[in-house]
Length: 351
Image (tube, rainbow, N blue to C red; front, side, top):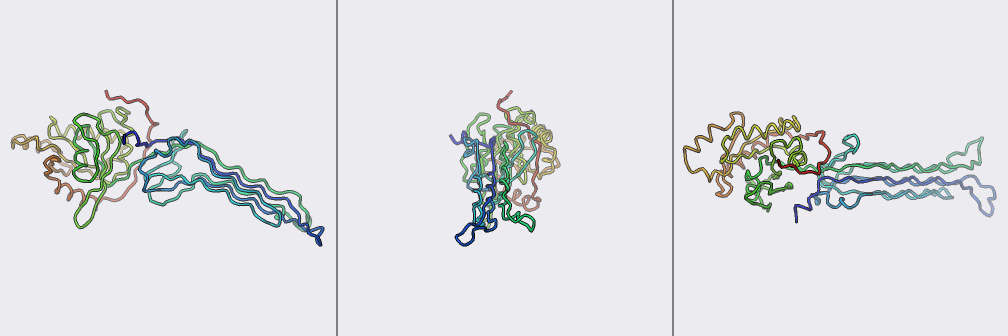
């Protein structure tokens, strides 16, 4: 199943290569019986390099590869020949990946662009050969430097989905349905909570061949910031969206109350999320044919947020929604919000 293949959290052991030892060698030829030192330097150990790859959208390829080691550098040789450098270990990761120290939670690196390379661990330096130590008072040094030991550590890789628009709402708010009709994405859609358990991305076509990326984030429940329903893992993916589209179905009793609960969960998880541009979409308007009920809904909408009334099934209000999203995207300043995300939770609490 597609859902089981979405991996956004892995812990791996990485090690850079050891540097090659320098050579302690002296020139010896037929007519040069007492040549000077000519030991070459050792080669540098391989780096561990993180590389952004837009062809990857999950960390699945690293789930069963717990140890990634770079190659060691080769030792120097006589004739001032330097040893070969160790081959770097290249780790391709999806855009939006961050690397953390599992003990302290410190962010060590992040990759947000295709082809971007970040050296996670540097390879050990190669040792100097004995030719580097000759002098007027020491013309025949018999020692050379050993290679430097490479670095070794465990790291945590976390993926935060990169998208222009992030859909925020309770389970069954119609997020997946909206994504399916506005893009070519085909998320699983069903009439029960938590149909979506992993983020889904879709490219939304706009006028004049323009487009933007929309992310369907799994449904949030009250208490998500404390980890209920794997909420901390779901909320992580909202951090890198440019704007947030809150979705509240027209069938709820109090639209403003639902919106404020969602807003409060974001605030508890990371207060900086409230600085993002927000839009409110009242979904499932096809279930409200009565003008009196529609007037009741309009009275419940908060005053401080732009809104659109939509029906994904009837495809009503979608053009207005696209226009509002595009205009807001043009005015929104690009930003990256980081948080001190809790450790990965292995228990699902839907209560």
